[in-house]
Image (tube, rainbow over all chains, first blue to last red; front, top):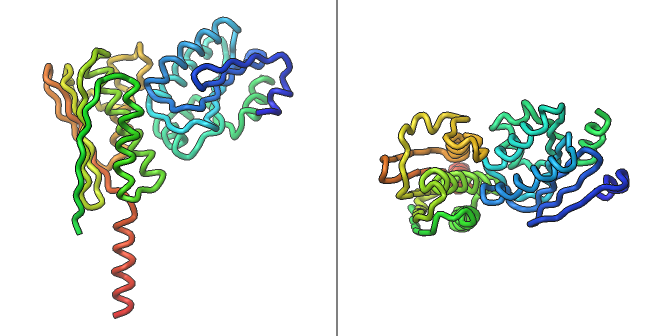
Length: 130
Length: 157
């Protein structure tokens, strides 16, 4: 996390309701540190969309390193953001996925359209060069 | 040994109660000595059913959701019941990716997750009366322990 910040000068970081939104050039990194259910999904979706529109965001990375729980509402949030950036050739990725979250992703078929990386840094590296 | 235990909880159909409901069931289920994975499965399934009651059953109006949990032996049964609008076509509602509320970014995976993460899923619904979701799951290592003890006993004999 520290490395990514050093790597990208002039990045913007916003923390809202326990979710951190970092912008590196045209990449938005959403670091989830709370439970991603329907209740929290509503606000994350609103905030992310505002940032995507205002900052001309192309790629989105969801960081699950500190996320405890996720249900199908999480799939909805990721799919919704994927649809938002795909039209401008953007990509959506997930990083730091635990085994329980991974099972939900596999079951939902999410990996057919979304790439998984071990770390946010690895995802940033690939996405910023594309 | 047939240990039985029951609990009932009633709460309002507010989205902040989704995490409350799944946490309560998880806490109740700990007496079965579940694995971390089993607990995650139960929490996800409960979260899906409660969210369905809030969004679809009560369509975001306030009503009561009743949650009834039964432990019988090493099996956990969770019933989640609302008195909302009911489901017109249960078969269709249970199809993966089918959702009546795409504008809410519902993925249509709710019932699929309940089916995948629990051993058994039953849905009873009547239009205008409400919906009851009943899920069952065998939890914990009790079965395995019994097997091992039996094996050990046989060896000793």
